[in-house]
Amino acid sequence: MEIMDIVDDNGVPTGETIERTKAHKTGVQHRTAHVWIARKKGQAVELLLQKRCRDKDSFPGCYDISSAGHIPAGVDYVPSALRELKEELGVEITGEELTDCGLSRLELHGHFHGEEFFDRQVSRVFLLWLDREAEDFAIQKEEIESVTWMEFEACKKAVVNMTIPNCIDIRELEMLEKHF
Image: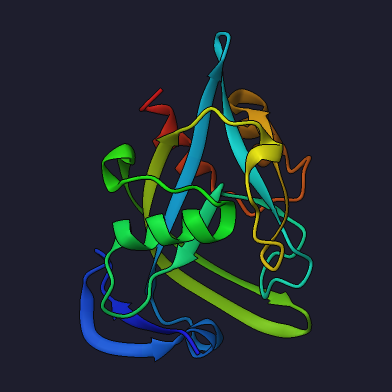
């Protein structure tokens, strides 16, 4: 059972907690850490995208952020980001290697696996420069089907035009672009 802090619009814990499943059934605001991994290839910037497992509780089989996760109660953004990178991709770094791109707020409502799903999250968005081949990541098979590099401009077009199944917020791509 995952217990998370309930947070205000700035991602500050209110002192109350909630179980993850209940937060997604009721739309209670909580925190997540998002890490976008980028590399330069020639003149282009590429992003590492993960393809979510088909069993995920939301957006199964969709392309998503390189590494992301809910923040447990009492934990801060950076330690959560580091933990998720290690668990999902086998990447071990220090917090100093992350570029803080700011806060993103997301509200969505959907249906997955026949269940209603409400998500209200305040996310700290990070950029990590890491040049590693896709096959060199140790992916967490329970969470991720695969990873692939995609040129940044092609990714933006694919998200806007919905030419790939994805759950990527275009506003986060715009946040990243300021740091290229």
